[in-house]
Image 1 (spheres, helix red, strand yellow):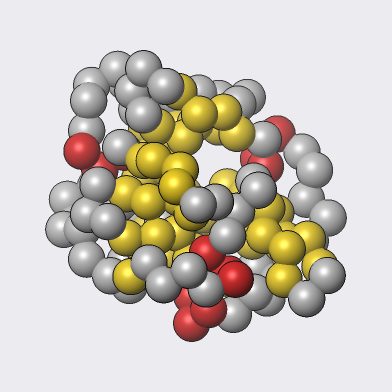
Image 2: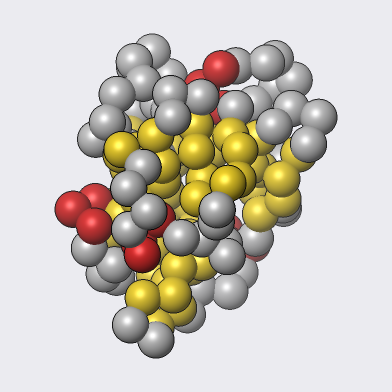
Length: 128
């Protein structure tokens, strides 16, 4: 998954940085390895890491869905968690709390964290 901002492609990837036990989702140019390949699981409505499908995009474990919270990859073991339910609409990744995946402070910069934020249709919320 990637953003195209000002003619630059920024790929989402699973960082080695953590928020508790979960891995942070970040953006960066030139990341083309297993940490940046994803699949959408229609059965569970979750976005999974293609190489290790046990990891799904989510809200950090034990934290409430609110704007400004980090987007993380957490272990998913076939339980249906509301924190991992996602939909694609108008190129936006939207969680069950109706928040969109957005770079922190709308800044499409190298290694910036992704957060859940109010959907505004901003260019930094449009994913391919």
